[in-house]
Amino acid sequence: MAQTTEVNKRIWTRIRSLNTFIHDLPGLEEEWSSIPSGVQSSFSLEWDQLMTEDIQELTECYNLGELTEAQRSSYRELLHELKEVMPIVEKLNWHRPSVPVDIA
Amino acid sequence: MLGPRGQFFDAGRFMLEAANKTRQLAEEELREVLESVARARFDPEPNTPARGVSGIYWQGRRLNAADRITSGERHYLRHVVIREEWPAGTTLEDYIRSISEVILDDRSGVFTSLYQGRWQLGIIRRSESLRGIGGAEWVVIEYRIDIGYWTTAYQLQAGVEGLMVPAREELLWLRQPK
Image (tube, rainbow over the protein chains, first blue to last red):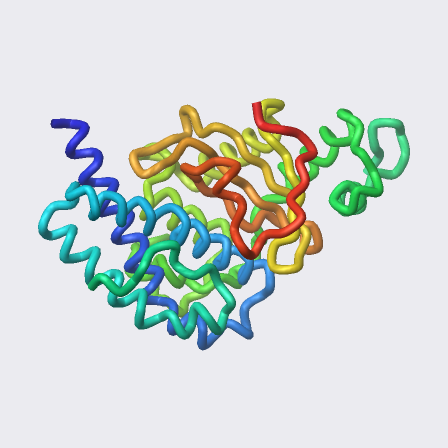
């Protein structure tokens, strides 16, 4: 039971982490040229983490039926939002998602 | 700064020469390099947009996305507060201290790589007691050689394989993780 609660919490943490970053991505792109290159590297490294680890983990849980209904809904919404920001991702030449974003 | 043999020690030059394979660092030279990196910390200037951490209450105010905070603050808020990669109760000072400890740990792997065209020194070690509920098997720290600051410190499940992202080239191990 405690383990289920931990997994549940971890999944919400991943969803929230992706949501907050994706939500702020258009604003980040607008101010990108005014940001020092070291800070740009930090954001890019973080995006790598989100695209190689988090989205992969959520997708596996989704495919295995391990997400609650509310999490499944949030995951599909997340993919939709990810698809929306793909032009920015392309423009910044960032890591493309390692999973298809078209299942939403 | 004087190096292990009493000569002037330029850690950045040593790192670049190691990355370019024109110098093989002796154990004591690598130690000096890592001590220098451990002291570097994140850039202390408040030049980092609070993107990805907006809405959080920090230092008595609710952060707006366009606010500028320090890189260390933003990394702490992302990786410790939002993602819970470090154990609950970890403070900013604890987070910074844990990074320095991993850098100086003899079990940590050390590598150089070209990330988006800039040389970086990376350190990777198993997270062990640093792992929080949202954490992962490994802690990764990256240091940008040309600016002399840490650029990230986070936890990674995939370990060494997870470092192989398209933006990274020419990864070279100076010491394998134990």
